[in-house]
Image (cartoon, rainbow, N blue to C red; front, top):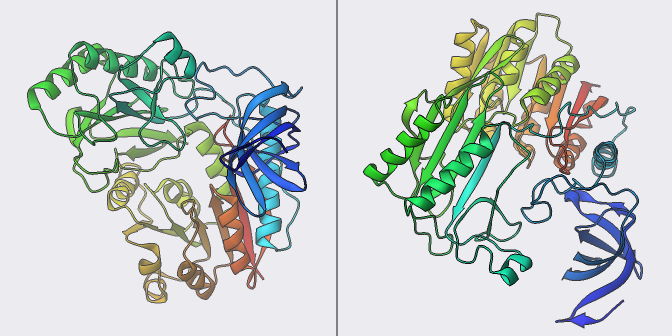
Length: 468
């Protein structure tokens, strides 16, 4: 133990031994578990405790006595500041090892069910420039590092970039991001420079005032490019001048959009998005199947690896051609349309109405006639009456949000009793919890972790469950 500051101790000369959930490192001090930000296994560090609980501490690595032999040099100049890509200092092979282990441990510890041998994790073919969507925030006062403050570099200047973790009103100005293909960096830099040169108001995140609020850039594997501005208020002459000049500078933008958002949060699901130039969507493509993606639509943010993920799901479904398939949390119908040609019929359900409209269009433009889509809260739509009307499922494919499935949905799935369930998850902890509830009628037969997000702790898990 070390000195105490505001009753939160400074732990001295501690060796970090492992990784834990949410990208944190782990060590033990006096038989107490300590979760550490900013360290990797093998580092010897001083830890400033930031949170004290009866069974564990959380803290930040504030001084390094020894760097781990495992470490590699981070490739991004913003590493450790913007909060993204926290595992850049860990070799990619080790990242994969940690992710696969986390999935297995969650399924064992939380699921408490009998498991088969886990398949080797599928690595992402690209571990940089792999994202097809990034959202940037405007701030009238950029975040400054200690060095920048000491040098007076950037004082009082606005920024366009990412939120500092845990600080809603702090945004680091991003000069270069390694997550998205060109021209993402060029567009963001142009927008920031144009706004500064023309005196446009960057948003004040504390007072909730300003003009420029958010910038979203989506790049598709087809070459389509969407740019969406979220503005706190409308100023038509200023808006049109900026968007016209942007479109002139970047004619490859196929969808230039804006939305007026005067709310106290950044969500735009309930707002009308306006088209300034081009289409109100971009097109993605997978195995010759085209997918329309609108500004509010969910589409897996790693397009190439999404294809690998969906191939796993389709393989686990083991379709013969005569099955009725339910695709729960279908989004824009990507999985539904991807498997439709392998089965008799697919029924897709999704909460977001705009996504369902895209799903229907996706079937139409691909000549797929054996899909039906419904919008609504899953626990309300998926009922035994609904199943009686549309047919008892032979296979259910579920891809819920991070919170997992509502208990009522699980009860309906158990009552429907499909032969097979393919559970795709971005959170193996909630996946394991749900599998525990399904265990009385289903056994896990296959497990496949898939890395969608290199240099982060996030990992997808695909599990096949067979009816007992």
